[in-house]
Length: 592
Ligand code: OXD
Ligand code: MN
Image (cartoon, rainbow, N blue to C red; front, side, top):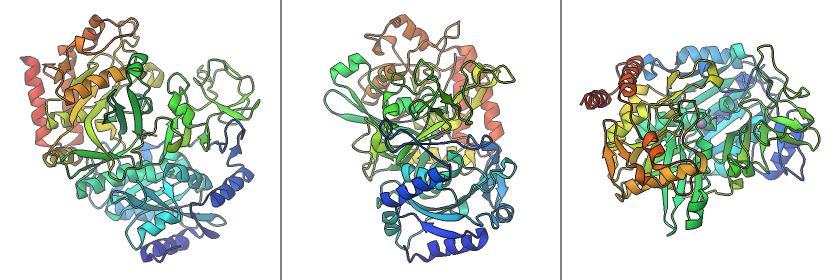
């Protein structure tokens, strides 16, 4: 399929190391993919679902010890320990190669090794990057064929160029020997003993965030854990925002937002460009331009329904692979908690057992039919609100960057940073509080700067520095905001309705970007006047409620500055002076 010497050498070396029985190139044709689906069904890797209700859809169950990304076993491997920071895992690269070469030795004996040429970004765009993933997993092949652009067209576009090497084997799915290793200096990724999406679909977190963030630093662009959303006003003008939230903060919901009735009636529309990753560059016009390098959604299934996110649910109605959701025996379809109010009568749970509603485990916790991290891998083209700019080779221009987290009291509904460096500070202090459901300990703050804590491919302090330096290169900087949909009242209930109504906040954000609305300067940044958040048609929310949502508790923020200080200490010396200066200024402003 190619004369590219580096590709051929990579395959030859891996053949020698892993000893596969045969090598199969993925050409991207529907005929080949269909053959592989049939093979996966025959081998029990996939269950073919009801082809009338869910055409082209399949169900997969992972091994029970292999259901999520494993941050503790994910490493940046390089020559120098300072290439990473204490909040990420580092391994000496020579030692990592030695250890991994031992684990990969002969691992594909008797298996097929698939060669997947894939492009992150539209094939042939000068901003796209190409990877080759070698894997013994047919599940990986079929998911990569949804999540990325694969096949001959990619290898043709590569010519004799460079690519990111990815080697994966599910090996024995041994969690003690599970490693997800990244070699930014060598453009290489090695992943072994897992077959769960985030660990093995190497184009996604491993390449498009960890390796790409490193490439971005060296080449002067940014790889971010951000959704990209277009908001069309009644005049037909579309403005784009990119937003980063830690997990469980509704990123996919915001990416596929449906405007509330009063906005819809006025002619507002929202368009999804991406739900997880943005590659961002400075355009010739001095603005920031963002592309979504992926070609599919790897979304969390539980909680997705026709009310919470109809666009996501509709995206899964064809050509989708479901992983670890429940199987509905009655009509050969799938189900998960929160899909419908009624639980179907005859379900098989994600472990393959008959599901009995209301049954509890040994700790008294209800047994779920679908794993809480069960997923759908759905093609972006299925999304009813997909932007017509999704394939645009240069991406879309950003008016605003939005950070956010889940904070019960501290952060207001929305605030605007004072300038770029202050915005970088706002991103660097991003955090979410744990909920009782997740840990038992309520209100524990986990700092997750720019939602990139598990995804930065180099030192976090240097990553902040890169953000600051990017600011100097952007002539027309987007404004930077922070949102918090999760403020609670004294009874722990969310005050803001969230979901589609978040457009009311985006509306204010865009008005600020266009200089159309005033704001109140406070110690933390610019806060809206309550009257400027449109609450028309919102039940139970008054201007007073909004006032309350926008209030800033000085004591809570003073405590917050202590948390930030110790977080910066944890990252270490490379936190840039500009951010320490921002923290000092915040402390001073709070004391005024
Ligand atoms: C994801 C994640 O799967 O961020 O997108 O964990
Ligand atoms: Mn993500």
